[in-house]
Length: 161
Image 1: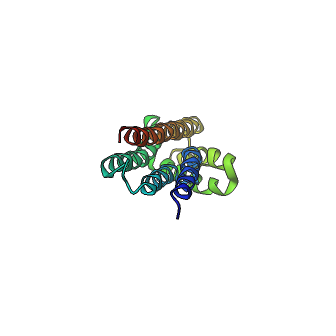
Image 2 (image 1 turned 30 degrees about the horizontal axis):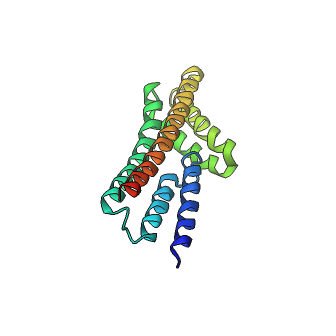
Image 3 (image 1 turned 90 degrees about the horizontal axis):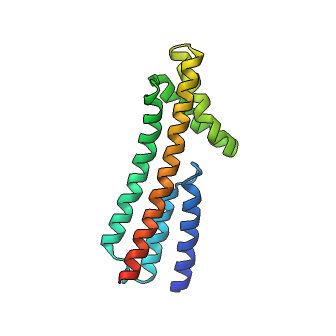
C-alpha cells in the first residue's frame, strides 16, 4: 500500500478518535494512538520511532485511568454509596442504547437510582447524581487534553527527525 493511503487512514483514525474522546461509545484515545502508529508506520518509523510511540501509548493509558478516576472521584466527593457507583455504571451502559442524550443522562439517573436504593434520600441522591455527572464531564475534558498531548508528541517527534 502507498504511504499516502496509510496517511489518509491515519488521519481518519485520529479524527474519529478525537470524536471518541467526547462520545463514550468510541474508544477515542485508542483510535488516536492507532492513527498515529499508522502514520509512523507509513514512513517505516523513520521520523517517529519507538520512544515517542511509547510516550504516546502511555498517554493513551493515562486517559483510561483519568476517565475512570474522575467519575469515581466526582461521586465519592459527594458521598456516593457503592450502589450509586454501580448505578452510574449501569446507567452509562444503558444510556449507550439511547444515543447522545442517553449517554449524558444515563450515568446521572443510574447514580441517583443507586443512591435512592442505598439511602433513600432524594436530596443526597441528587447530589450524588450531579457529582457523578460532573466527574464524567471532567473525564471527557481530560481525555480531550490527553488526545491533543498525544498528537503534539507525535508532531514534535516528526518535526525533530
